[in-house]
Image (cartoon, rainbow, N blue to C red; front, side):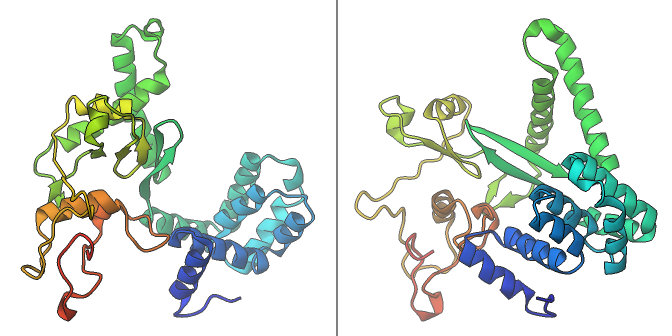
Length: 306
């Protein structure tokens, strides 16, 4: 239906919980449904008849977000006749050209809105890998790539170029990590949950000592192979978290303090890793720690109640 005036967050959250999606993913589903049933009927018909793929439909929905229905209709007139014979990449370029020709002012406004939503996120991948996705204005993205590429090519040449057996793509990845490590070495960076920004790995003692091979946990990513955790352990600073063998709880401060002490903060962040609300993926280090049974009603400051 039409987008409600004040209650859209509740619609999004209801859908997110029902479909086990994040709030962002649920909002995207709602947006796509509204666009196809309203502003882009021609795209809807071609999708329904099998002449367009879902990826084509998602592309035009993304690019036409924010334009008027009249502009969207004129874009469809220009691009849909050739769309069934185009790859998704070619189709996206056709839509972008049509939008720039038909509504340059709206496209500039859309660019300003998109610029305000620029972001960097990490996506876990198989085999202990992850992708870092930076969504930036095109000039800034090109600037970032040129800096990484220049640093990578200097290192690649010093290491022997192709004879080193390492490709330039891998050198770019190494250059990006080197820049990040240099920044993290700055001790003036702000803290979260009382700790400086740092790579955190959880591993049990038997696995660390090669007496077992249980998966380790890279905080913010998920399970990693035990051998990778042992390699990281060589240069690590260790923080011991000893749990009660019966309850599994670290510490119980009872009613002595409302404020969660740092040792208990460390344990809760390590245990929960992410926000406890279903569908929310916010890292625990950026969340509030509070009492499940409210302190004002007799709740205790314990691992089981925070």
